[in-house]
Amino acid sequence: LELAAGQVATALGNARAFEAERRRAEALAELDRAKTAFFSDVSHELRTPLTLLLGPISDVLADPGAPLPDGAREQLTLALRNGQRLQRLVNDLMDVAAIEAGRAAAVRVETDVAAFTTELAGVLRAAAERAGLTLTVDCPPLPRPVFVDPRMWEKVVLNLLSNAVKYTFVGSIAVTQRAAGDQLVLTVRDTGIGIPAAELPLVFDRFHRVQGSVARTREGTGIGLALVRELVALHGGSVTVDSEPGVGSTFTVTVPFGSPDATPEDGAPASP
Ligand code: ADP
Image 1 (cartoon, rainbow, N blue to C red):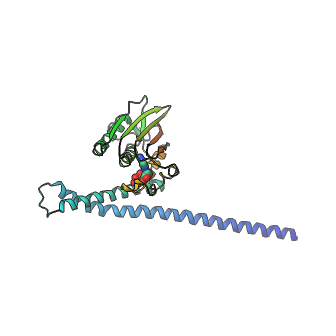
Image 2 (cartoon, rainbow, N blue to C red):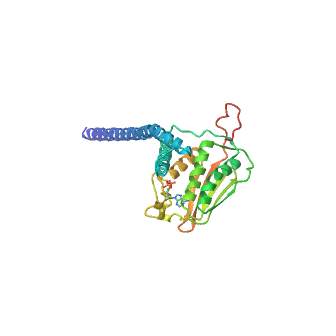
Image 3 (cartoon, helix red, strand yellow):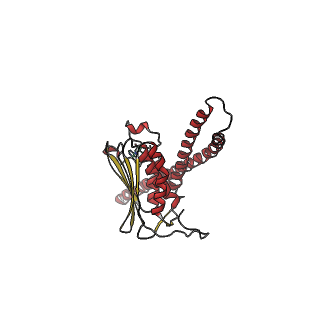
């Protein structure tokens, strides 16, 4: 009898411990949901006033004949540039929040990704040349149809390329895109400042910026690569980085060619 009582006590103890553990897990999950909701609500609330603030400023600046007091054009330009930076951060945060909350899915459509990536690289060419860098693009037509979410692909390419421009002081940036088996492989290589080995596993973390380096002399928020990693993962792919300080960095994105998630409703061409 004594033995049985002991067993019952142990079983009761186990059940209580199990129940406590379950409650803790539930509380944590709830906290996580609340955090994600807060993150997304705040980002949303920031977006509207920013739009209303920046609209009039850019309208005034767009009119070269607008009568402005001395120095006002420069001040407004500075305000606009910083406001736009904040706007990009808010948009990126909203994207990350939506993905983390499981509210974002890639809608893959057949995309002429050779032309698309080339076009996106063209968007950054002027900025690269202004910085005294050369930008080469080698994205030949692919042997098979490729299905990506164009809006997401655009963010992946533009984030990697703008980092390459931002963190390269001399030399060149090379964008290449190839098929390898049934995967699409995009690389963005630069001859920039590079990333120390110890930082490599961290650069894709949200808000992570390389400590105390020349990188800090460049504006940034540490959200770009986190977003790239999430967007690539939504395509069932991965992103890696190879880098050597003082020599340069190569970011490689690999995604399966994929299959369509949706066909464009209006029958318009799939590529943007
Ligand atoms: P941000 O550029 O806004 O700081 P990212 O998430 O895009 O944020 O990048 C995180 C960090 O990784 C950067 O702060 C920088 O230290 C480093 N990094 C990213 N891309 C490069 C690159 N091409 N060359 C050198 N360092 C880079």
